[in-house]
Length: 281
Image (cartoon, rainbow, N blue to C red):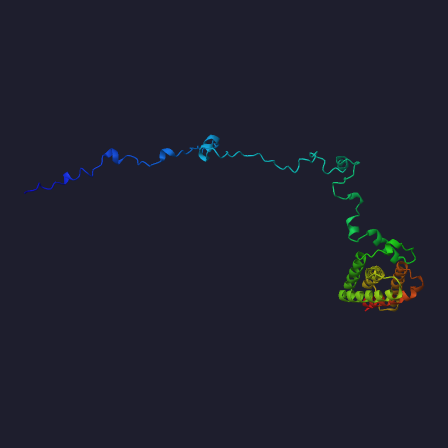
């Protein structure tokens, strides 16, 4: 029995696909049952509530944005009228008299504040009065100026004394500082033992510093005239007595030590005597 010859074209018919079937899009089962909502994501477009309801089902409510209140901190404040720096308009805006800041302003009245130099402890009126009291020991003392513990004037007089000595070729700023501090501490302890009330250290420093003014004048004279002669020694002694008399007067008036003036003047003369030695030698 003889068989027909092998022909490959006979077996290709069962495996060949039509071109239309080959390029046909695949079919997914259940596609017709799924209902997707199509949205337009263009500018300014938002999904429709009906499509959202179809997507989420009938049991869900679509999202509705709620309006929110915006906090305005300046809602209850009066409008700015352009008169912020006018003092007369502050009181009228707050319901008070003109010039009054009102209870809600929280600031002080600048007209009643003292000057800046006075807040820093620098009062030129008291400095002038104490300087005149030192230059004229017979002048009636002003109690308000005497009790003022000002240190600006003493600092100026100490620098002036050192500068005058520098003109004569003597660099004694360290000696002035050391002798001044030692003398202030010694008189501070002495006056506290002699007086029933407490004496402030700043008061002692202020009085001794102001009464150094005659010694500054003596050091200026030493630039022109030699103090190592008999006339210079007499002038130096009078200057020491002048400083001691003025300082004792200020201490007695400030601390009410009228019956102890000589006891106060003696240690003051010792302190200013050391400054005189710096001036002469």
